[in-house]
Length: 236
Ligand code: HEM
Image (tube, rainbow, N blue to C red):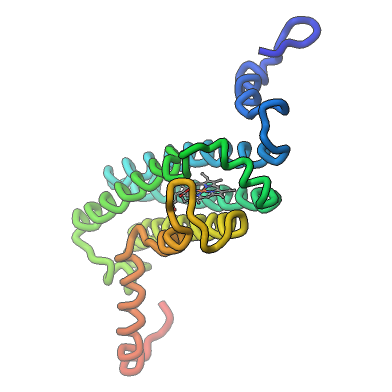
């Protein structure tokens, strides 16, 4: 631990372990490129945010399992805001010149984003959340069609479903933004460190976690033209 001239460290440094934290980036001598610092800081801080996202997601899964809808929605609201934040971090990577990135990527050896512990935990928990949501709907003996056509009557279920849609959209948006970083850095036709052609990342960015929550919208749209043509309704 770095110490002040009088031999002490501050409570702030001790509690947050800033010494350890700030020594986790390569120092000037170890860097292969001056902009490697941007890459490492964004990558490491993304893992920290993903840790927090997975932590909140875990709480949302167990809240849904115990029918605590409001609590699940609260945790998912946090997940949403952290995912937006995670996406914003990617902006800094646009400052790395492509040739510098080529130098930096040699340090990754055969490592790739597919090994990101934070992203795989988040995806795993998002899938569990979907399963818990389906089980919860079954316990309440209600279908998505009822929830989405009578949303004021099923306010809690509707809010929970929409929180899942937020998370699903956020994950697609993160992947899309990440794809733009990748294209800008290595090109559209390139192949990643793990041998992934970039167009595969484009395909992944359209993958939906909760397809039924998107299908219900299409279903409502196709029903609506007939329904509203024959039954003009007052606003709820
Ligand atoms: C200069 C910046 C970056 C470049 C050029 C880049 C490049 C790539 C490439 C080419 C892949 C496909 C796998 C491969 O074959 O290598 C990939 C996947 C991935 N990267 Fe990045 N990446 C960057 C930054 C980040 C950051 C900051 C994160 C945050 C954790 C991240 C997380 C991931 C994840 C999770 C995947 C798996 C793909 C998915 O499931 O959609 N990457 N990246």
